[in-house]
Every structure is written in C-alpha cells, then in structure tokens.
View 1 (cartoon, helix red, strand yellow):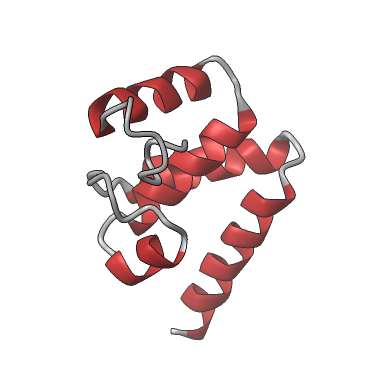
View 2 (spheres, helix red, strand yellow; view 1 turned 30 degrees about the horizontal axis):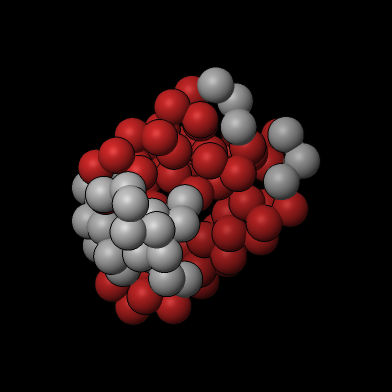
Length: 94
C-alpha cells in the first residue's frame, strides 16, 4: 500500500499492485478495500490524488471494485462501507 502511495521507493507500481492483489485474494480485508477503491476511481485523478493514490496507474474495473468493496463490508470494514454509501448516494442523486 505504501508503494502505491509513493511512500516506498523499494517497490515499483507493478509489484505493489501485485502484492495487494495477492493479499486481497488471500482474504486480507484492507487489501480488498484498497483494490476496490482503486478500481472504481481509477479514472478520477482528483479523487486518487486526494487519497495519495495518484502515483501508480490502475485500470478501471467498476464491477470488480464494487465486488471487492462489498466483500470488505461483509467482513466488517467500516471504511469500505463509507465508500460504498457515498457511491450509492451519488448514483441515487443522478
């Protein structure tokens, strides 16, 4: 995660993303939340920058992002719930 936020120069972007994906695949809830966030907001540079994720490019995958955030919520992650609530609120207001 630190490498994705450009705070660990020893790990490049590809390796960082690969490590977070492996952790998420093994059920690590913060990794699922991070990946979900990145997949959903990959094409929103302002949001990524506000959260210090503007260093490493990630391909947008909205459905996978929603899936990962939902899995994190089901595991009790309150931050993932807040993100999903904000997304749902914006969708319902449009």
